[in-house]
Length: 319
Image (cartoon, rainbow, N blue to C red; front, side, top):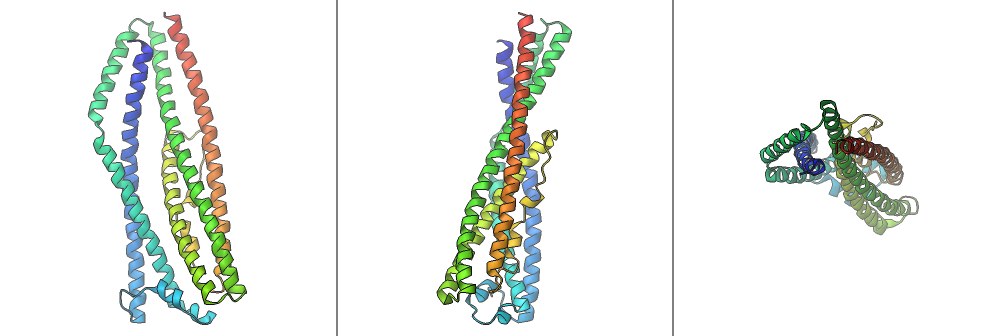
């Protein structure tokens, strides 16, 4: 078996082992995220129970339904406790959806880990390294050491390239969903204008709330897509920080902004407009982040070419 054949086989095993390492890290991150979201749900439930007790309503009472069926003046719709409870209920519903998605991700990650035989791969890797050591005995010691160093760098480049490509795919998925969310908000904004400023009546009010419900679903899809994008970016940043500084703080929990004060009849149009502006900013951040990681990908690919050329140079000299 030639050196290049040994290296190719070693690279395949190395990437599989790194995949297992990544899955274990993802499992840890998802578990932490689920713990956090469960605490949020408990807090929302606690706050809602306090308000329900004050209002002497049953636990099954839905503040969202009350708001959406309520007709009356601006002052009535802005009743402090009802408004606060409706927002809490919305945020709790979003948190429960997020919990469901994160749980599904955790199940898939755990399932993939269970199918992996890490010990078998480690044994195979050790055997390949032993074969390489035998092969290297024909080399001068300094050339053998240099070749090993080059191959180690090449393996790390291969792994980083895969991580960047996976992050880019997650980022493009987030862009697709965010763009779709903007279209839905545009429609909701049109109905809100008709209802708020043009006196659209009950039909416009009903259509507006339908669009707001659709917007909530889209916001959730965008939220989980951004969470997954952020998780992929963490893997890249842990592997390499050179030429890559990314701030992902704005990628998570941005849906909360949409929920605050969304039920006020007078402010709905303004709020939707503000939400559209906020999503546009997040979209811009995601696009800029993808540009950064694509630049990093170019650097990695160029580095790979240089390493292969240096390695081949050494191998040719020893034929």
